[in-house]
Image (tube, rainbow, N blue to C red; front, side, top):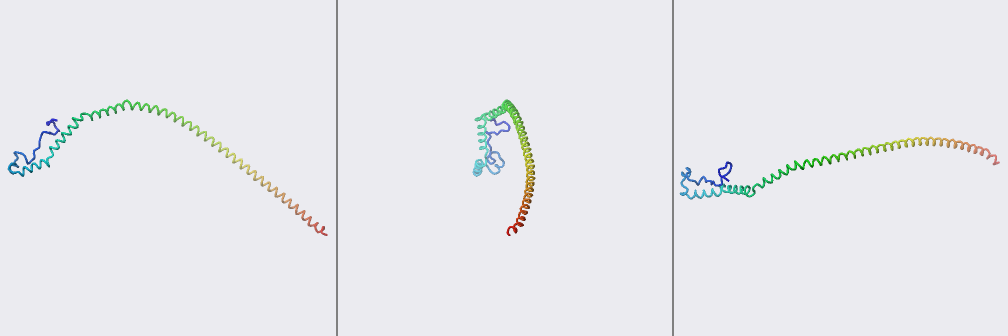
Length: 189
């Protein structure tokens, strides 16, 4: 990795802490770093605790080494293989599946039409049979009603006849008893 490429971080550049550097006017006004051990200690504490640039540069170097050197172009090859697989599926497999699907769907459609026609015929036959059965039931009901009316008329006629015969028999018995009653006093003597 070159340090002059735009957009990249330079690994070789070291950061200078604002406290530890030569030629700083601010530092000159406070005194030299060698003259005051406190400033030297503060500079070391700052560089250890607050200056994270060396650690970040190490992580950047590790990241670049991991993804460019060790892995190489493995991810790119995987993506190219996936792209080739997708294009192959679109160009070869998809039309083949489409053709098979249309062939099978046409065959299924023909079978469904035949089944539908058979069902319609069966349904029509069933409906005709029901209509015939309904007509037979109605004819039977009409016949039963006529028979019933004839039966009731016959019964009424028989009732009338029986009533007339009963009335005649009652009159005949009444006449006999009256005649017996008339003869009874004659026979008792």
